[in-house]
Image 1 (cartoon, rainbow over the protein chains, first blue to last red):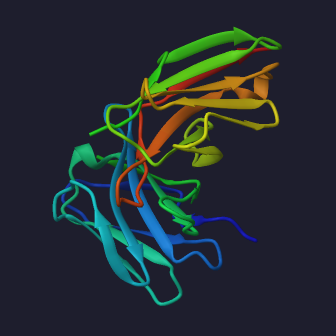
Image 2 (cartoon, rainbow over the protein chains, first blue to last red; image 1 turned 90 degrees about the vertical axis):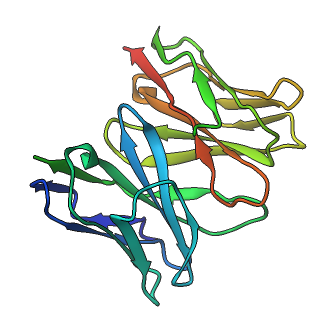
Image 3 (cartoon, chains in turn purple, red; image 1 turned 180 degrees about the vertical axis):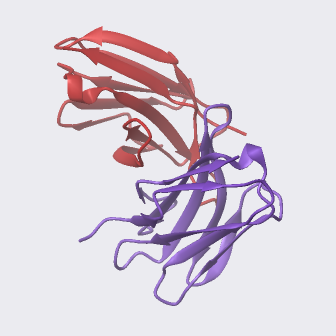
Length: 114
Length: 111
């Protein structure tokens, strides 16, 4: 099976702009989670989508939003970019088994805000 | 907030040596996972250990879990330069399906 893919891999944006990142999960995986990784804060959970519904949400401002399509592909959007949004954004898909589940991560999108 | 905290933050060893990383957490968990991340890339799942298990093996990896001490350890035996990466523990607790990640241990294996 093909792994999780994320596009684009690298992105440079200016403060105030908005950005959309895309994630295609492993075939058959219905859960897609998004994480922000920075040197200072580590890996922080943004949100999780399951069957087109946001099922879990982290502690991020409303500028961060996402959605999931019927084919399980997911997008996340960040509006009004700030310098602090510069980070590696990771998407993970999973096949639930029991109380928790293994997550399969994509290579990430490196976002730089100038 | 981070549930798991890895120790040490950084570890530097020679090829062939064993590497041990520890993870401590604060609240009861259902399971604990270890992931590896090569520089600037996505995370790769290594192993999952459930709260009723004490030890698991996968190749050169050995994971232990001590729920009474709320801690886990990851042992990599006979390390290789290719093991150079950051290693994260992630805990799953309560009704949440979302694992909570620690800040990671940076491992450097010198050839």
